[in-house]
Image (cartoon, rainbow, N blue to C red; front, side):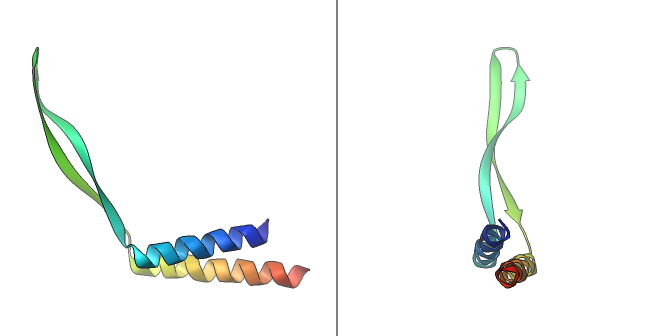
Length: 71
């Protein structure tokens, strides 16, 4: 179990180092007056600092190595 968790953390850490965020489009209602509705597409973004990926990567390596030593 710990070995699998270590591998997952390593993969997530590498992915977070490569991609520092993503953006998506959300439809928001601007005017809703009975039968008349006006909406607009708003672009939102989710970003995280690169060091967060590094910390997760290091934690994954530590968990993976610690699970190998228990055998």
